[in-house]
Length: 153
Image 1: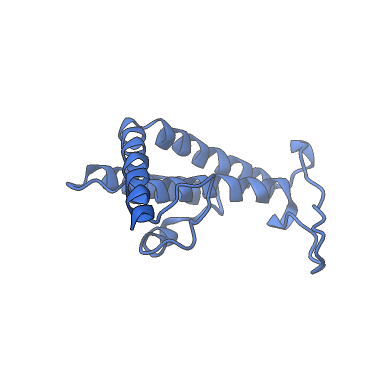
Image 2 (image 1 turned 135 degrees about the vertical axis):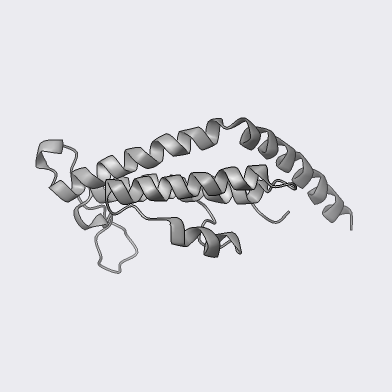
């Protein structure tokens, strides 16, 4: 009950045991690697749904890894080397220039943009998944009730 769905990818690299089992499946270097990774993560997502005691947290963590594949690949497409902010150690983070014109993108950046689209398709499938939506509503209701009980004690 301490799991938070959060916005975007929050908590994806901290919530165990899911992090350790999903992280090895998460890769986005090339389109072929992204396809294999997205397929493996989708299979895990469906396995979490099919378990006798369906695991919503597992489903949501898998969705987050798929979303992270999409956003990280996109970052490498937008910023040569994948670095979004200037590395100066200061408190003010200055964003590095983005490459938005496909003609100016390197072959590697175009590959990352295509890899991002692979993950995006699977991420949208996760969000629209009927079992995911139903389990999310159930989880949030159960969590709300649990928090009420915790507040009383």
